[in-house]
Length: 243
Ligand code: SAM
Image (tube, rainbow, N blue to C red; front, side, top):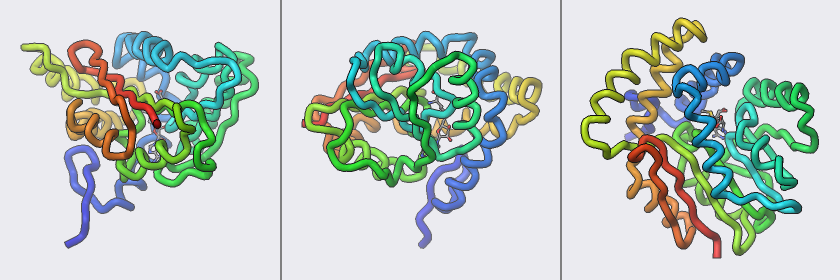
């Protein structure tokens, strides 16, 4: 039997998922930032601010922002003087990010194409690893978590910001209606691509809930794992330490 993974609500072969996810982000790259504001009413900015406050980046640290896309997290991490590498599998997303950095006069970031499942960084070479709204798009999530653990120094920290499952009573129904009806319409109107936004919503639904994902982080070797739900778990910050 061939092993399958979820691509939204479909189950597909692993290579097929990687290829299709590539297609989604190549398609949305130029409208990605606009759509984030439109879909979240600007809330993603506050979630990202909070996320980076938790990371507590310090000058002189080496931080990898994996699946860094158009640079939102990296710009925040670098503001305090940390050395930041933005890695992403998708060259179109990175190109948008590099152009944004140029327009904002943000210098010193390293931009590199990489698959989270197989990193070129040496063992124990980084102080922190961040991944925001990226992990659910990765085909082999356990492999990516093991790589995060491998490249961190002892005492290094792992932080993941991702959509999760809200536990607020009544909210799930409203959110369901919004995400399945409104988001693809927004995707159509603003990005000319309802299917990509349908995938993004479906991928959120298929992602493990908070206890299950925390268990995956522990299974990769991290200690003192923690989950911080935001908006009842609509979004969550998962973290852990390499000791
Ligand atoms: N971190 C950015 C942010 O918060 O705005 C971008 C998030 S975007 C929703 C997801 C990103 O994950 C895309 O840029 C996509 O190319 C990247 N991605 C998907 N699979 C990946 C993989 N296996 N390795 C590295 N990046 C990946």
